[in-house]
Image (cartoon, rainbow, N blue to C red; front, side, top):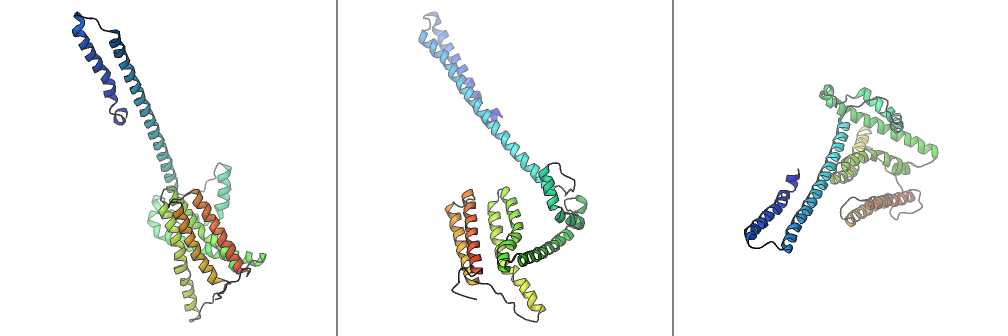
Length: 292
């Protein structure tokens, strides 16, 4: 590694020897006539010290390069261990630390039925059942979504919160959790563009596909009866949504198209402003000039 990182190390060490031999040869010829001067001997003795200093500098650079390479290999080993942990099959063994035990108890009502009904394709014996796992996962997403909407509706009626506000807050956060998880996983792997594009694309998919398909099924089941959508300030909420999109693009451009802490704080502020204005429109604290 030393010779590959600094191939000039040998030359630096060899230069004083050649210089010394040259000086010795030059001094050997006139030795019969005149002795060496003290200045020349001082210069000859100072040259090896400079070469030693250069050799020590090169060795320190080599050591720092080796430390950087070792730290890089340690990071790669940690990333490899994380990827191996993600690819390992699901285990329901009781964890050791208290934090993992609390997470285990919190996620057990969701994980246990999935563990019973879906084959884990990370096992070599269950890889051939990937189609069953894919279809079953979609069905379980539908079941959990139905339960989430039902429970949110019941909580809203009990507490006295309207359906529009529950949709803007609880349901919006609940349906965005899968996007959050996938964005975090992708961002940790260094693919920031994929994380941002998946978040934007999922919202467009929800508006252009997620809403029309249920409405189309409702119309087919009710013999062409249209779906009535009533919301206070819907037009202003849509305009506010487009304005927020422009602010998001402007904030990303202001941060030089990089995901930073300042950009994250700006996103939180924009979401809070959008949420407050939308709730004020729903409770008619703000009157939208255009009604639908």
